[in-house]
Picture 1 (cartoon, rainbow, N blue to C red):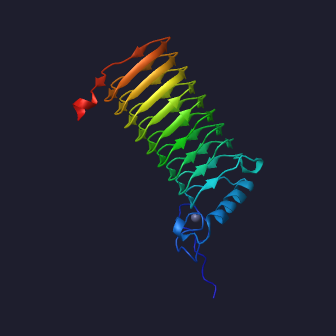
Picture 2: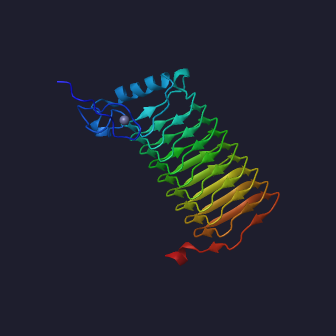
Picture 3: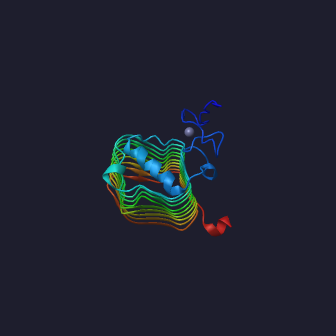
Length: 270
Ligand SMILES: [Zn+2]
């Protein structure tokens, strides 16, 4: 009997279903409990795909920890498409070079997300990405625009020694835990408009070479702006500060605006 090959239900996927274990999805789009293979075997298939220079991982469900090694064969020489992918374990892109754009829109990171020393040569988009555990972009380098619009950070997020060479946009992102922007450099316009910091936000030893906007930004925990160089205008219009707020050692070459500021203390709020 030759049954008709069923095609994966994930949009635009043309692979056949992982029929022994999942009637709807191929091996790559199947939920982790319907893979039928171990994490190591799955990861080997991923590395083989990279070797074939196929960087389309859109909607893939990564069942466990995966470490993208910094060797010649596991660099992304074209556009890396991880949109809508689910990483069920820790993921390590440390030191990895993304030569094309890096698309992590709607990607879910259920384990740690390690992007330390990663190098993004072109646009990097993390719009609506969700980070459930610690995420680290320490020493990462964004040579194109970095977009984190509506991204959600459930655990600590670390941006230490991070270089943003083009625009950085954290608009409407939500930080549910401590956010640390330390010793980093923002070369172009940087936006934190409508961003919500629900715990402490630390901005320390930063250079903003272009405009920095914190319009309607909510700082629910303590906010520290220390040793910041604002080369162009910085504005905190309609920003809301609810915790202990510190502005110290600022170097302001242009102007800094605090229009319609809303300051409450936590004791008032409770
Ligand atoms: Zn599929």
